[in-house]
Amino acid sequence: MESGGKRLAIFKLGEDYFAIDDACTHVGGSLSEGVIMGQSVVCPWHGAQFNLTNGACTPPARGPVQRYPVRVKGSDIEVAF
Image 1 (cartoon, rainbow, N blue to C red):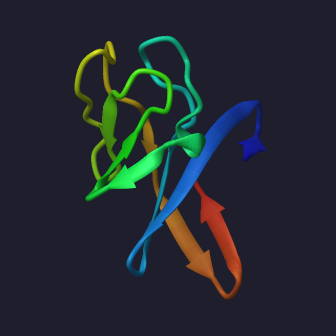
Image 2: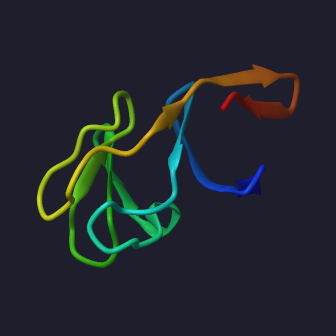
């Protein structure tokens, strides 16, 4: 998803929604194309994992991703950034 010049990845875990930057901090792989493992998304390019609840990462990522507040209103998903 792109909004306001930002590419975001939105995930649903159980009843909760999470929004993070859609680029791995290693070399920019699209996290929206990754696989969910527990509470993390795995970058499809080199396997770095990003925790959806806090943005923390594992190598080879170079740093965490930004996480954004999400609100569900009816059938709409709103992301604040």
